[in-house]
Image (cartoon, rainbow, N blue to C red):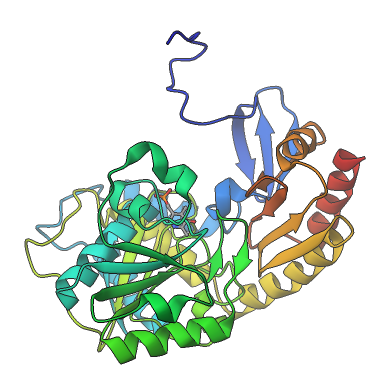
Length: 372
Ligand SMILES: *Cc1c(COP(=O)(O)O)cnc(C)c1O
């Protein structure tokens, strides 16, 4: 097969033709000096907006002190972050890594070790990452097909068939509180409660993948706090350090222990600069900001309803269009608006949690222009 090389970056992504050079709050600037309203935040990553002063100052200060020592020693930012995450969760211990997929890998290894079982029940349409373990439990055949054989033991259920798949071989039930990549489908709180009951009945573990929904995006720090059911473990990544690479896997106090020294590791995991930024993020995501997320969510969802059916929770929102989404994403960019898609006709909006109501209304106006 021949192909034309247009860039020295491998073509693993379908990139839009724009190069961003600067960001500030909910605004991005490209190489031509054109400004864009960013309602995507790097796929729910830059939760506090670009160059938010709190993580910026924390990362700067840590850059000037210590970058790395390895996990053979302690560092202050990592210890502090673990403590803050435990406080938010209501008692938990953390394993730190560098991405969402890695946090899922840690969760899968923990579940096997803690239960001595190998099956993981996940949902059809789910997304848990692109590494082999995470891909194996991702319920989208199109993403898996070219890479078989994958890790054995994955079973895919629908919310209504969960009970048929959980049994004595189940190590874990793995769920997203809102399926993000798979089209922004919120999980019914009753299904989450049923999953916890099934896990308890069969000696399995309930793991929530909050890589996209966590760190305030849902309008609570963890989306499970809005849905009302506590998991045994949770994964975080995207918004945790406002754009610096980090992932975290949290095990609830009282849940089975699994990982012992030697079982799992990550060279860069718990990096002091990323952890210092994350500590500042956690300090900033307070009750006032969470209330703001719920308020701006209502403004944005209200405006989006003019274009189609709206789904989501907090500032993880989608609107189902009457036409393919990709050309609309490209047209929005022309109109100075950055948004994303999640599926054929689904627009996905994951703006900074700090977005103002005025910016939300401006975004709706620009989207209207793009759709005209
Ligand atoms: C993005 C995402 C992942 C994968 O995260 P990476 O950092 O890209 O590896 C896993 N789970 C969910 C729910 C995600 O949204």
